[in-house]
Length: 145
Image (cartoon, rainbow, N blue to C red):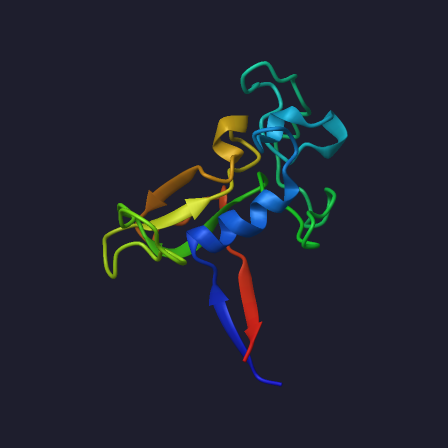
């Protein structure tokens, strides 16, 4: 079986990340502290409770998997996405990809140093692809052909 290796698009990450809906609106801070992703637990979102502040990355798989069996979709490290940053098309679109070219790529998911609001599935940052930082990482995905 052949495989195609890719960096996921922002919308792909969003769709697989929401399988871990920890609260009524999918925000990381709504879960009991044992299930919190690795983020700055001293900060709260809305009426949420403080969590654990670990001040470092944690090994992959340190937190429960989501409904798709994927770990660490929120927090720990921002993850680079395939998309160039920009406005998405208006109206109904299947698998929006963002612009065809640009200056900055999307990062998503928050990090161990992020507030809970930055760990939401819909949150995105953007930086030039050459930027290296201790809070950024990457997840390679494969699809069977």
